[in-house]
Length: 62
Image (cartoon, rainbow, N blue to C red):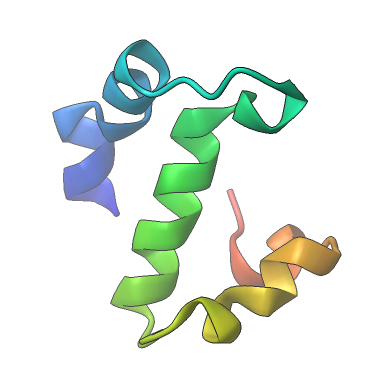
């Protein structure tokens, strides 16, 4: 995740990814969360379901 941060992954996602709706907000955070989940062993979107239920603080810390 440090490599993704140094590479500016969140900033790049915010610059280049858009979805015309309220679901398009915070692309950088969403992409970073998906990458973090994959690094932690998630191999499907179902493995990342905890992120949909306010579990960000359980999965990621500062």
